[in-house]
Length: 269
Image (cartoon, rainbow, N blue to C red; front, side, top):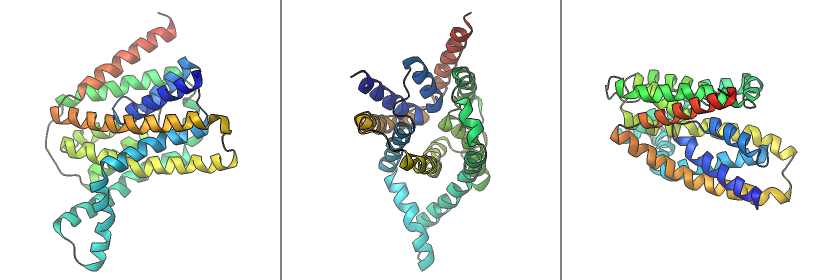
């Protein structure tokens, strides 16, 4: 029963923090440390990320449908203005995925070492918090997504591989910093995460096929996946609401408080 409760808790943590700008990786490192729980190891991690991936598919199904069909309209020469818009988004997502792909392939082992350190997660959470609290002070320019903005958000996504750096937070911050319209930047941030998250899942799934989890752990995996999906959906809707209201800095305050509290606890001040 204790294992089931911990699996549910980590599923909730993954679902909420994957999309809220407070770092899912940082929170999973911290919660796993204090709970002394790693789920089912690789399998648990893979399915938690699948749960949050499904939440993007559900809530952005209309945009994703347009992005899928637009290339076919291009090939047939029947592009409407809407199809042209989403065809550009296809290109921008590819651009934004390149940096994270390179980082994941070439720096995978070095980055994984950092996931064993809770203090690293606390320190990078402070950085995440500072990015969020600075957003209200950035100049609003309401630009459309463009190649420069997309590749910059891609580098921010690559940087967010580090534990404690929020993927959504760093990409939204960089997009707004370059003048992107806040809600479009947030929506693009979610959609551009699909190849990166799916790619990471596929890389881990390859290892998972070699050493599948024992049947005794399947209930933990199933519950963790379900709760990461449900709370992933809630987190996306919640964040979009905060973006509309211009209150992203509140996530920054939370991250900074958590970071300082954790650092003080770690060093025993």
